[in-house]
Image (tube, rainbow over all chains, first blue to last red; front, side, top):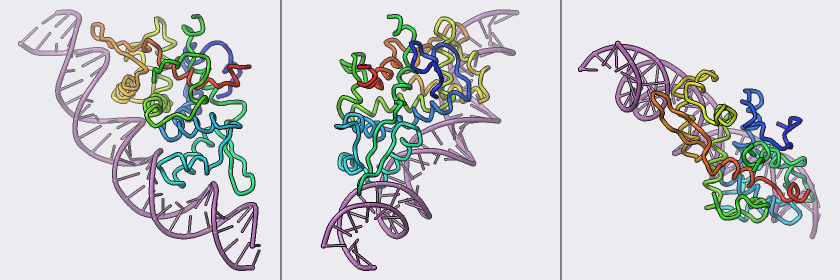
Length: 116
Length: 116
DNA sequence: TGTCAGTATCGACATCTATCGACATCTATC
DNA sequence: GATAGATGTCGATAGATGTCGATACTGACA
């Protein structure tokens, strides 16, 4: 996933055909973003003040139950998109640094866009 | 998906919490990329000469059967990532223009990255 | 018109996934 | 230590998904 050129100008995805090994981990990250609830969780965390949000912030804003939120957070964590830290009674989630989302963004950027 | 500011400087995802309606279509696109085979298909199409590849180019490069490739192509097409055109006996797939991948890339780009 | 190659669809199957309720675990506070 | 609140885990279940073999469709060509 975090290969040497991932944050450079051109998209590895469009530069050459990706092999099996390269795609499996990338696909897992995209798959994690491929659920509306998880996408909203990432958005809420990324846009929350301080760049982090506790689980209580999340459960309040969704129509699904707390165990489900917890499950989705686990998926996002395993995909390398979020990290968590316990402070007192609450667990706070924030984007992983170096940012995986930025890496995925660069992956999708295409030559036409870079040139134009 | 293709809202007015999607290709601007900052990431909508990190600017404000995304709502249910906004995320559903985005999630579908990410979900489509969330399979290793599909990610490789997109990569192969994007990197193929002329920016397009026929199904026969794809079936040759994968270990899964032709019906499965056809199924994945349908998913990518429905997600708005690829388009197809029949020429003689062959069906050619290429990236959709305006490019959906670029839109997703912009979506994931984060303020920190833009500022830095 | 008949045949062939390329591609899509269909039905079936095994596996994965999202969700829930119930319960366990952790921390703070009394 | 006992209690309460916040969070994670477990087991169950319904639905989605990836894959395949068989088959139908489409265009080219004899």
